[in-house]
Amino acid sequence: MLEKMGKKSSEKPCNTIDTLIGEQTQITGNLVFSGGLRIDGKVQGDITAQGDGSTLILSERGEVTGNIRVPHLIINGTIKGNVHSSECVELQAKAEITGDMTYKSLEMALGATVNGGLIHEAEKGTPKLKAIGASDPVIS
Image 1 (cartoon, one colour):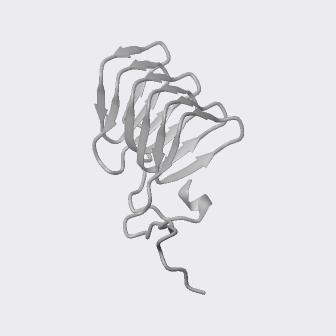
Image 2: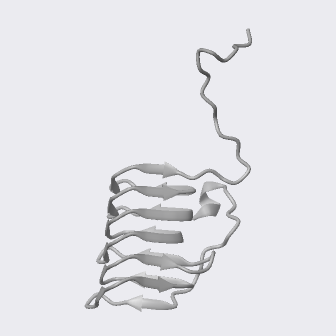
Image 3: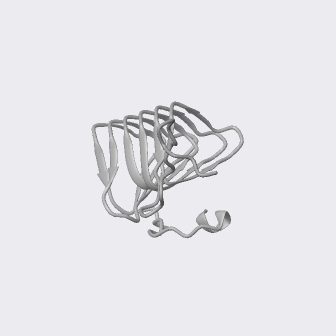
């Protein structure tokens, strides 16, 4: 995904699925994982990744009601809660998020929806823009 955008990530996403939550599975409670996690079922609770290279994949049949905090995220299902990705988010065509999303890098397909705020988290060392007020000198 990042190579398509011409950007390099400091952390590489996990390329394997270590854990699968199947379509007929419902989990109630908070979930902590490392590596690769794919959700085809339903999770009610917060999901947190341990490890900088961890990846969460939410299929089009997957549903999460709770907050998500992971480095890498690929979404094609439904999330009701806030999302925080310290690296990259890929929203596929059937992705639907109701909540605020914080991200460093975002790829969004036609049809994906976010009903909430989009908050871009700048790279470390990237200068932020400063608003010029009326009292600040203007160079002519």
